[in-house]
Length: 324
Length: 281
Image 1 (cartoon, rainbow over the protein chains, first blue to last red):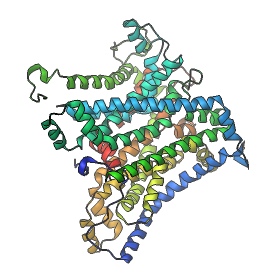
Image 2: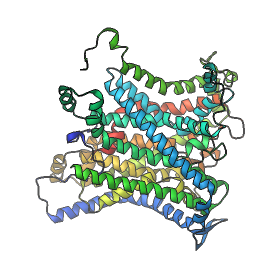
Image 3: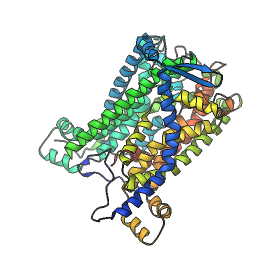
Image 4: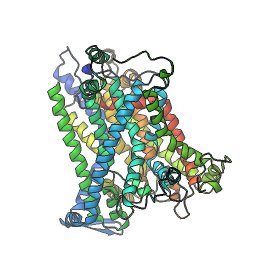
């Protein structure tokens, strides 16, 4: 099998958003460049048209739904009159405020834990003398698993009657807690299921970043007699920062759209305690048929995600610029 | 000073290996429990206390998953949707990725950033408008109801991955092909594509996995049992009956195996895609 072109960037720095390198040492005339540009747009057109046609309309329509009076008719929706009431209903709903808090809290905690655990796992695997390939392959299994199946699996593990976790708890004298029936344990249980599935993803990204750090940095540090802890904070961590930033971005955006896992594992319960923004929007639109307020929740969630992405790109480009 | 040449028992029983063992158990135990339950006799699946090691081993759950539920149908649906969408993404993504990675187009950076935004856009915000659109077209409960949205929403990420691979290919060969008079599509096909094959694998596996696991759109657009994909089938397994976890995990093992094998075979591509492919500039 041919190896992918993983060329380490000098200094191990990885630039997510580097512009494509222009062919060097050759001056091209304008006509040729224009011709090439036309060709480029021609080749991109089919993909851009498909993406645009299928994504732009729904995005605009969702925004429109969130600022109008929406009524479901026999053949679709009718949007009438500009109104801010959908958003004002949303802002005044305790459910939305809780869902926002829960989604942010959930995202922060799971991403932080996954980052710590994932980095630890990557450091362990990097030092592992044998079986690294197998461990990597193993790590990919939870990552590639259907989230719904992951949720069903943990539902079975947490079951109060025949679940294995309560059985283990009772063996070590912790009693048999009703895990999914009470708020804090249910939230924790949800997080554990998520952490199990996505920590391997973080670990693999970090491991690939680790491998790209030049060996001589470590050798120099060891000659200087630096401690392992110091080496980690002075060499490994700074070199890993872009990789970690990327992993965090992916995970934060993904966690913020949290839907599949609570939909199956807890149905947002007990009560509303594991109701994420996406579940709230889904229930509002598909169950209660409150299309306007539901769209307001969905659109504001999307807005937060896009905002996060833009901020990341800005900060990252600025940082890459100062380091270059 | 670290002692690098460890001897005797310390070579096996050291901190690193112990930690690796913990990692191994953390990942494997839940997987073991799923597989063990799938092979437990149906009457023992809900035994309390649970059987840590299924006895007797049984494949009854597997036959039930296919006979009592339409699991075979769900697999066919998932395969059709994922394969067609992945093929479309690769064809369109290769053309666009090549252009974005190698041709001097003004404004392509803006396009790439917009694509990045679309690829992270939460599905929940577009599900209802897409539902209305598909209903107007009479496409609810059909393969295209999933193939078209999947192609559109998973294309941006594939374009990013492919672009990064295309950028890394040296320009010299392409130029000599051009001087020899080969047309652009021919150059892509015979010069660039063979060198970008690992990138195509990576993008393909990512797209396939995304299609295979997608839940929200599949749940909303294809309500008819005949067009449900695996995630929806699994989520609604209990539905009108009580959930039979034995059948459910037998079905899940069948659903996890193909993608697991695929990912295992192409683990290098997946790893480089998770990192270099998506990151490297």
